[in-house]
Structures are given as structure tokens and as C-alpha cells.
Image (cartoon, rainbow over all chains, first blue to last red; front, side, top):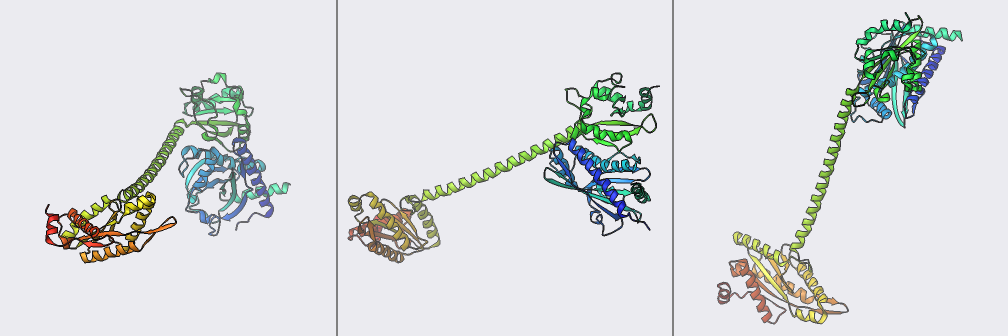
Length: 203
Length: 350
């Protein structure tokens, strides 16, 4: 049976996420002419096969997704997921260019890839920095498809645990909601929280 | 072998890729600059390697680049610079002076010294993709604008047509009405008479006609003035309209002359109606300023079955003849066309 992270571990994780998202917000604002607010993220932890999880109602729907795989002392995938309409809204408000269609074109997909990259790097980069671990990273990838295809969840092991970080972008009074999924490989979830535990015992 | 020579040997394969690639050390010194970038920028590696990249491209010293590149030198995750948000990382003019749109991914790669990291930039030229999408979007916008313009033009056309129809209706209505009394005019009366005459002749129904002339009307105009005369005419029109049936056609036939066409009515019925009209007019008090006066009328009646006219004009002529008989009979009375054969013959056999 898997041991769930304790309150200290979760607190450390929350702090890492906050730092990372804050860093991402600063990077976005340095880059963009329009001011972008990133809400303090909420963090949800769930088993992949839990039918009552936040994920259940998203399965089967088409999503726009920016993802990055990481491999090292623990491995997995970080994915920023938007409903396609939100993705178009986000890119359109950042660039001021209305695509005229409800779909992202290749150039806009590149823009979303950059925004996702900044956000994911904020979180993953901060995890690496704080834990002083280095990872191998895949190239960031923009994909569209059903959530379970995107997150490779179609044949999950029953005890796969997913961390869901939910945040909101606010750009010039327009609200765009996005979710970052952190999906750990077998055994990596424990390794990750053990690393956090070691960090907490250090302090 | 120095670091630049080592890099040249290590990255030589990148000279064969159709994407712009260069390698930076943490201090900003360029260690590798591939052939593709030489071609794009016109800057040869001899002029650029070993010096800080900012000397050639100072814009890269902006925070938005420095901050995001910094992590790469510590093994951080790849960083993307999209074409929409940055246009380009390395300005590379095309023939004609336009700059290439670039999509750039910078990744962390191990440095020559273990534990150090370089940043490898890979720049994709997305100019034609960007242009294709722009052209497509412009075409889409043009199409939308044209569609909107067409829709507006069509709406305007519909509005104009509606307005024309409305004016036409008003015009048509005016063309068949007498301006003073609002009754049908002479012209329209003839039109209906012609139509109803043919209908009646074919169906065997009767058709009656009453002609009415106000008695001594010239005297009213002379004593009270034309505006007062007009008031009388308007009132008489109302009285007639009120007295006849809805299906009867009432027209102002001339100055103080009125005509009533009574479809499916025989002579006897028309005589009754004529008498009703005469009595109603005689009863009516006409108030003209402070004075009031009474007016009488003479009426002549004729009908299709009673007098067998061959044309609508003959029916009217018969009614007119009867009207003269009423005038001769002392006015303020109605007469049917004299049915004796000699009169009829003299009337119709001209």
C-alpha cells in the first residue's frame, strides 16, 4: 500500500509550486506588454483510477496540452492542459491577434507552447533547484487530443498517483483557467516525497 | 585544443541541418555558430566565435531573455521563444529586407568541463508558415467583411423596397381617391363600372347606378365662399357613404355631382337607396361658422335589368337622363330612368 505524503511534505510541495508559479508569472510579465496575473494555485492529489477524482469528468474531452517529460532520480510528465477555447482565448489576449476560428493555428500553438513552457519550467525548474537534483528533459511538446491520450493514461497502473496543480491566468480582465498535471512514473511519487522529506528534515 | 575548437569538432554535424543553431557559454560567449546562421545573418563564425553574443545582438541582453536562458546553464529545462511573442531571436533578413519569423528552442547540454552546461539554441524559420496563416486569416477576414457588407446591402435593399412599396400603396390609393372628399374619383369609378358591368352581364345579376347632383350649389359657393362649399361637399360625401351598403361604390363624379354603383341591386332597390340618400341629405344641418343651412339633392337612378343598356356608358347616360328628370321635377327628389320605349330608344339608338 502506498503511503500518502504527510502534512509537512505537502506544505513543502505547495511552497515549491507557489515559488515556481510566481517565477513563471514574473517571466511572463517581463516578456508581455499586457499584465498577467497568476492565481495562487490549488493542489489536488488523486489516484488515477478514482472515479470521483477531478480528472474523471475531463476524460474523453478534447484538450490542448503543452507537456514536458523529465527523467532523473524520479521521472514523469508535467503537462499544462487547457480546453481548446481557453487556449485560443489565452493566446489571443497575449498577442492581440484574433485567429477568427475557435482553433489554434500552428503559429498560435507555438505561442501556447512558450507560455506552457514558462509555467512548467517555473514549477519543474524550482523543484530541481530546491532538491538540487538534475533531470533530463524532453523537448516541450504541444499536442491536442483526448486527455487520456495526451497524458498516456489509457492503461495506467492502478496505484498511479497524479498531482494536479490548478491555476488561473487573468489577462486584462479575461479569466483563463489552466491545469498542470504532474504524473509520476512507477515508484517516482514515493521517491519525490522522500526527497521532500529529506529536505524538511534538513531544515 | 581550446574550447572553441573542441566545440567546432563536437557540433560540426549541426552545420548540415537546415535550422539555425548556436551554442552559448554561461558568460555569453558564442562557442558555435552553424552554417545556416552564417547564411541567414551574413555573419561568419570567424567574426563571432569567442566573443560575447551581445556585442552582435545587444537586444538579447533584455531581462526577458537573460532570465529565461540563465537556468539552462545549470541543467534547467528547455526554453521556448515563439515567433508570435518574439518575432525572432537572431535578426535574419530575407531578400527584400523582411526579417525571418523564428521559433526557437534552447536546451541545456553538457559543457566541455564536467558539471558545466552550455545552452544550445535551435531556430526554426517559420516565415512561410506565418505568412500562409496570415494570408489565410486575412482572406477569412475579407470574406467575413464582404459577407457583412453584402448582408447590410441586402438589408438596405429590403428596406428600400419596403419603402417603395409603401409609397406605391399611398400613391395608388391617392390615384383612385378624390382629394377633398376621400371618395373614389371619377377615373376609378369608371374602372369599377366597366368591370362590374361585364360581371353583371355575364352572371345575369342586376347592377344599378345612382347619379346625384346638389341643388343650387353654385349659390352656396357664391354666398358663403368656396371653402364653405368644400365643407358641404365633404359632409355630403359622409352622409352618402353612411347611407349606402359597404359593397356599394361611392364616387365624386364632378364638381357637386356624386355617383353610386350598387352591385347586385335592381331598380326598385336602387330607388329605395336613392330616396334614403335624398332624405338624409335634406335632413342634415350644415353648420358653416355661425350660420347653418340645409342642402337638397336631385338623384337619377338606372339599372342594367330595367333599362338594358349595351355599354356602361349607356347605363350612366340613363341615370344622367333620370337626374335631369328629377331636376325638371322640381329638385329634392329622385327619379328612375323613364322606362317608356321612345325615351329608351332615343337614348340608346344614337
